Amino acid sequence: MNVYRDFSSSGPYCGMHSTVTLGTFDGVHIGHRHILQRVVEHARKTGEKAVVVTFDRHPAAVLNPEASPGMLTTQAEKMELFAEAGIDSTFILTFTKQIAQMSADRFMKDYFIDCLGMACFIVGYDHGFGKDRKASTKELREYSRKLNFCLEIVKPVVRGGTIVKSTTIRVLIQEGKVRSASTLLGRDYSLRGKVIHGLGMGKKIGIQTANLLLEDPEKILPLAGVYSGWVEFDGKRLSALIAIGPRPTFGETEEAIEVHIPGYTGDLYDQKLHIGFSDRLREIIKFDSPESLVEQIKRDIEITKKINHKYADKKEKKQQWPLRKS
Image 1 (spheres, rainbow, N blue to C red):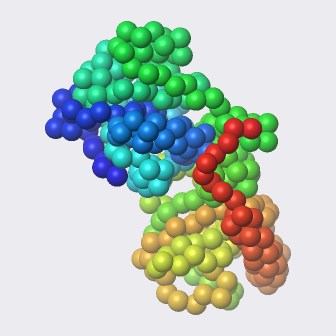
Image 2: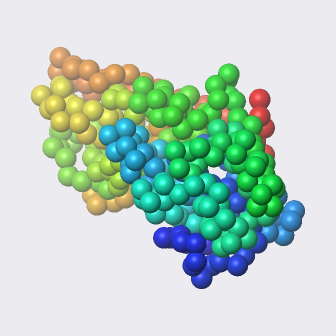
């Protein structure tokens, strides 16, 4: 997949013929994937390029920074997921207040029609863009007639009676409901970071842990607690127990992200880890003694092994493509 940063209306990439979708696509959840699938299908059918236009940040970070939501996916993660979906080219637009003030029809003509040669525009049911997000479904139909491009409005994807939306997924993760969030994401919620030196408490109690410094602090953290999950490094994916929050048993109030890999004894300092969350096991609590904590961690490890084994079996049977609306 080609990635073009600092997308403008007069770049060297102009002159193609394309099927285009536009959005922030935070999370690249199963609703987003359904839109991407339709873009790819249409482009393959017509011989055009399948194109995503996205932003370098969430628009709220520019328009209303105090209300800007945390991120579900970094830009690098989004690029990986777009490529996985079969997108040919992604254009990253630097979102500014000047861009936000452009009318939708001018934006579409300058960027999509004149530059990208857009023949078809495919977006979600709740899409709105241009100044004050005024270009809703009705206006888009008018623009499609005026500027002579086909328009497809994709219906919402529903899971368990819930419309799949980034906002909903953020709430679920912040409430610790990572299993429900993974159903809407189409994969486990995950974080990346580097292993740093901690206080050495794990080594003292015989439970070795890796302390993680987040790669991107803007990504939202699950609710404080102990989670079953997995860790990837050196091309391996291993079962893991993940704790987010303080360590009250040792009098520590500072929040930390600790990862224990059952059976692993190697040195992970400075290693980059990718961790994913399968389920929330319990809250962070203060134990009467380190020995009581160790006994609980041993129970947590056994539960994690069972959960991850059962969850892995289910995921092997699941097909991510094609997606169906329900």
